Image: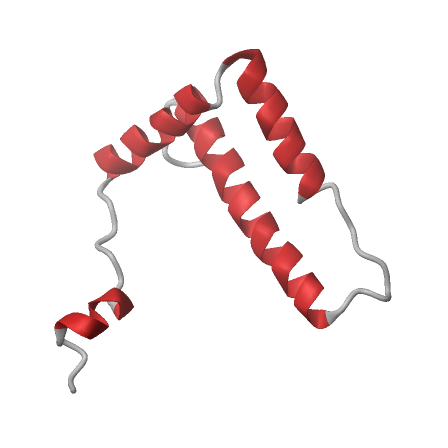
Length: 90
């Protein structure tokens, strides 16, 4: 079975969006997290991930899980900021 078979297609990297698509996506995130409710949701997301630390008893799996959550939260926060600023580079 080769990598090109339909069952293995999910291994392929999606095409990278161009600059206009990236800005459109960032603006969509900015709209989704706009206003007081959006600020509250982002603050909650930040408190659960970026502002949280685990103690020395934390397992390797817990540390890895939190780091993945932090990566996703950082990405969302970055998209919101880019969408609000209307720029691609921050």
